[in-house]
Length: 94
Figure 1 (cartoon, rainbow, N blue to C red):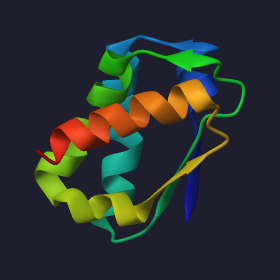
Figure 2: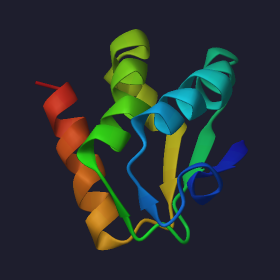
Figure 3: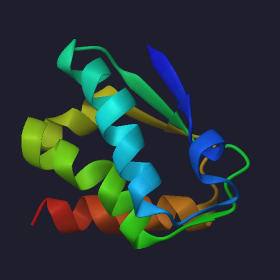
Figure 4: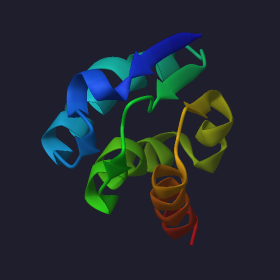
């Protein structure tokens, strides 16, 4: 199980969708292709935009199906970040 610290790429306010896309393509996708689990650690991230989370997760859900969420562990998410993740995940499963 590989841990990715989102703060390292996004800072306290995760808003840069290009950074999210880079994390998704360069780090998350190769782990998931191997069939391994990935931990997305949101420690020190105070807030995230919907566009950041969408850029991070939506293509993964499209590519691997909603069951990919069973392979992703969201760690150290505050209530704000949890809420944004839930919005994006719910939207992608419609």
